[in-house]
Length: 392
Image (cartoon, rainbow, N blue to C red; front, side, top):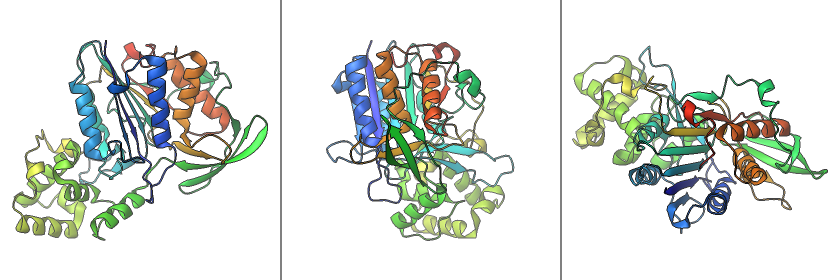
């Protein structure tokens, strides 16, 4: 049985999206996989943006690492992915009346968003008899494997969770005072000594994403409603499959002269933009036009009502409409960390790694709740994996 992992941490240093604890989460998980679960260091691929000696967690590099992980898998192998970084929700942009959902996304360091549909496509390629566990310590992460069955999520009652032992060993208890905006100030007590920590949401607001894309491109006509065309314009061939599908449907509509839903939504500026691109470069849309699309619904945001994935296990830092916390303790305490990542490390330490997926998520929920965190971790997988050991 092979054991292979991809660990991803995005701190976005020097940008409006900067976080502090994501690369630390990755390094602690690497040590945990080696010491507790018997992974070989050579079978763990690390992508972080705080050290140039590691592969940078760009959209392309993350997708390539995940694709290689799955391609190399054989029956019986254990695959593990940990992502710490921003999450975001991309609203529908087609303008079609029946396209009303969101694409849940992880946010690589270069802003080349990876959607839940893209992750689902990868999970569907996992060989039979092999499973992949995906821990996402990011905002809006519930549902990140599209259409995975909810086992612990929106419908899980708090009184059921309270019946579980959680142990009080997360290292600190306290009250968190949530403020508006991205930054949250928090007060904790640890060993009865009051100390201050700062929390930041691991959520990338759309307006911040738009501002970063404007800075990246010099194009100030970007707004919510044409983010997907902008991502394609910036990343082209390196865009995710979901973005390419959106653009293929959009370009087919544009070339066909049908001014309905898609073109009506993105507006005159975007239509003029596409026209100029095609006039200057006939091959502009080639990466999208070569993408297989079954119908315009392939470009829609939200769930596609696919068959439930059998081999994927998602442990999310929160529900799809919630935010996850990035904590920066005071100087004389531990390094910055993600709330879910820290909880998982402490639970593994307490149980010596002998914990099921269900137990891990329930314990994490109870611990975070008692500390004052509002985020509720979730478990999404096939029934057969609920009580399976976490990782292996």
